[in-house]
View 1 (cartoon, rainbow, N blue to C red):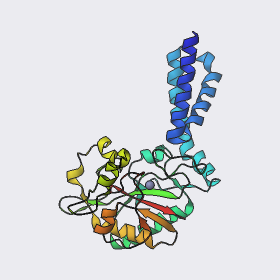
View 2 (cartoon, rainbow, N blue to C red):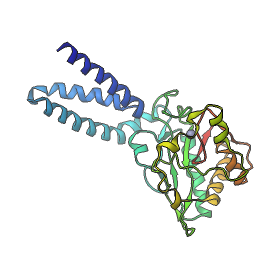
View 3 (cartoon, rainbow, N blue to C red):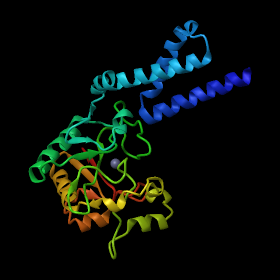
View 4 (cartoon, helix red, strand yellow):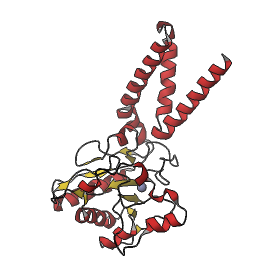
Length: 276
Ligand SMILES: [Zn+2]
């Protein structure tokens, strides 16, 4: 009995930590769920009814709070959610379900204005964003990112086209990371350099993310370069990270575009932009 209770408590602590690390609000929602289920425990006659009801209550509470309470509360922390739909949208809706789409208002303005400028040149394009930040507290890490902890940073997906040159509005990786536009021939190869220095994590996403879509998605250098140039021309933008071989290949002149360091991960699958 004692061992069973201890295992249950440890499992609960693990679940709370996991939900908090992945979504920031999930742990609190779980505690609320436990409180509700405890209140109604006498009406739930068996343990499977308790777990089933708990799961349903958690999903309902989490989903409803994500779209109502969380965006309102985030305002007090100087964060706003990026759009869920439209021409600036998450590549994967999971980004929003996990609360990873919150930024400072200045960064949202940068993205929305950049999209408008880009659209005037490439009508009908869609800017797909990846991980941004959590809604609350500076310094709360958005794992596995090193720096996405203050609403000032956002990752954007590259643009792609199909084999016939038709622009596509999604990406070969379902999560936007891990399908690389690798260095060619004599191009500078930081993936090799960093890996040879022992930074095993630098290109690890390629081992995790399925590569089956890669042949059907051709890197759209023109639209990606246009987006990076528009972003770098914005006075609010402090830094942009993209892999050095792509900075050269695309002829990106801005000194704001820098190498992120071997302690990070490859940036030839996405653009990282951050504001002051
Ligand atoms: Zn980033």
